[in-house]
Length: 367
Image (tube, rainbow, N blue to C red):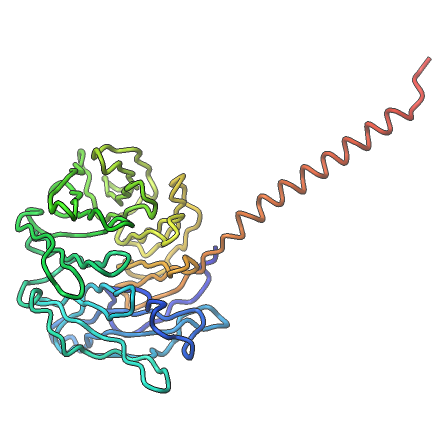
């Protein structure tokens, strides 16, 4: 894996980041995809705008374009978190008081733009700041969690309520993630984490915090075993905890870095985890062994706010409060080359052994 690609500065502190889904036609823009970024200076008088930014991946350098493909300013409202519909049906963005839908806009020239949708998400109007929002893998469910601790799940696009819990957490729903089959939802907030059965609309497991622990982020494995990973801060370290969500039992706990985690995600193929820190480092972690496979030191000058793998798990997008975003390519062939090297070494050793065996056979024995 390589992290030697320069970061790009887009002029606004970034809080949300993700990939334009394959369902959106990018053939005339970039063969390696495009990303959407959200952030800004808030509603004060800082002079820093609030905006959604779309950037493409340069085909030669595999870095983000220095100039955005599209940029949509959002006035005095800060776009904080985004949920990108996997089927290309737009982007739901959380603002200080409400959530709004933005749609992809492509003309005959296939240029990619964003526009504010005429559709109003009435169920998410005047609900206060939503700190976490996510679609399930097929885009049929949308989950949102607020600063007030309330959790809501809706069918998409009808916005029919599936689950609504006023006291899911005592305050601040920090993170949400659906299992790969969409049957379960994990939520983290004040107090223990919880796992919800979507069909039953009930909590089925609790993820308690031990002494000095704070569960910061959660992601389900991409298999059907419903294993859950949490990025958990304990003292001056960040750990990855692996959970059996059927019982709420901890399977393992592994220290990953001596720094506080500030962003976390899992690759679509389930093989890797990514962790960003408040010092701006980005780490790639093997999800099976929980060993760190690569570290991009000072990937950002400020803390990493968001991480997202591309749909084919080939690239990792990271964004930061320092207004920068960057792409880190994922190169799986390094592991293969290591295996090939061992094969070569074994062949050489066998050849040497065969040579000495042959020499020993033709050498006359001493009388």
